[in-house]
Image (cartoon, rainbow, N blue to C red; front, side, top):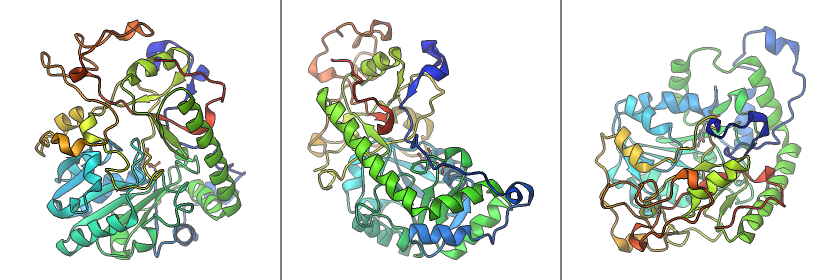
Amino acid sequence: MRRYGRDPADWLDLSTGINPDGYPVPPLPADCWQRLPQDDDGLAEIAARAYGSPHALPVAGSQAAIRTLPALLPPGRVGIAALGYSEYAPAFAAAGHRVVPLDEVDFSDPALADGLDHLVVVNPNNPTGRIVPRERLLGWHAALAPRGGTLLVDEAFADAWVTDEGGGSLAADSDRAGLIVLRSLGKFYGLAGVRCGFVLAQPALLQALAERLGHWTVSGPARAVARLALRDTDWQAATRARLRVASARLDALLRRHGLAPVTLPLFAWVPHADAERMHQALAHAGVWTRLFDAPVASLASREAAGGRPGDFAGGRPGDSSGDSTAESPQRYHRQYRQAPEPAPRPAARSRGLLAAAGRCPRHQSSALTCPCCRSCPADVGRTPPRVPPRLQPRVLPRVLPPTVLPPSHALPRR
Ligand SMILES: Cc1ncc(COP(=O)(O)O)c(C=O)c1O
């Protein structure tokens, strides 16, 4: 953002999956500021009721649990999506686990858990919008748990779709050994600054986690806001309806401009061969989106993933302070090298892909970023040089939360 020299207030920031019309926080009682937070203030029970889980532990954002949980699990091979929330891999690696990066197409494999000790599934995934059906998740859990393994399901973006989908969440199953579910107040409730999330799991694991985290990790005001928001079913229903309308509007807008988005209530993902150019053109117009560099061979179509139409959406909230850097699984592999880089997928596994992938044979880098294969970022708006089909740019998914794009906003034409 800084590179475009625009005042922060002038940006239309579409780079995060956070509901911009978050829970309206009322004035809070004085004692929540003045007293130490009380564990027995009813928050755990309210959260369990709201999520339909047997137990819940409040934490200082699900991020606190992501950093702490890996040390409570026996070190092993942990499968983590290469294109997803980037906090999991460093957290598991730091706790001595071997990170196995997974392609999107891997999540359609009912036997995915067979070669793993633990598996992390962000459901729905951000940015790809992939939703793994409950039955498949339970199948992976059934494969992992008897071996002492764990299925960790991150439902940070689930609040907006779980109810409508008739129970895609595993919250109600979180009393099973080897199953952990994470929930967050940051996305649907738009309360990312409150730093409050929940871990749903067996009491013994919650106890061990609570001991690691120590006393008073969730502040009194955060607990007070969380109690209100989780009980406010009227606000939740109205927000779901509002997000549904807003995301349908965004979806229609993007389609009107010839794009094929995967749209969820809190964001849309637009795989496009020209995504970087579009990202830059939007940035010049003061619209900030998030750019990803995904090799096509790691992406599955809805059909290939076994999902129903409309069942396949995805993403990850953006750090809007950074510069325009594409996020690539190659960088991920370089960073967490303990696991061997997976061999390229045979073409047969890539059916239903969203676009063609390519690497520059001369420079061994992405055709998108290689100087001999693409136009310079400064040339935004200029016709890019013709690239042989073999070197077509990778698919670049982008995240656009639906609620703030004005209907008249015109995306640049290709
Ligand atoms: C998939 C996912 N999980 C967890 C988190 C952490 O959320 P929080 O710590 O605000 O609950 C994020 C934040 O961006 C996320 O994208």
